[in-house]
Image (cartoon, rainbow, N blue to C red):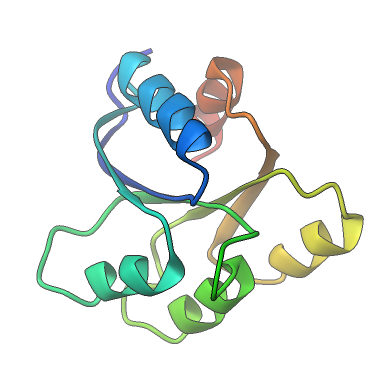
Length: 126
């Protein structure tokens, strides 16, 4: 897989999932750099800062304090809402999938764990 992105963001609170997903993203060449946030507030603060913006966001649905839906509500009202968001979650609730796909920035709903084949499929679609 050739290098697809310079910078992607991973919003995930589970340290094992962070390790697996960040390693896969980097080892496959999907992205040159992955920035990780374990909560919505820190991720949104980063996006609102003068730091380089990610080209893609992987977002867990179930996070402490504020969840993925809270992120999407704030995100959709921001000036950077054109960044594609991939929901990366362990949720198997069909209602969750329907609800997140109502947000224009959400381009995919993927069940954990992230796999090389899923990254390749994303590259073809995005």
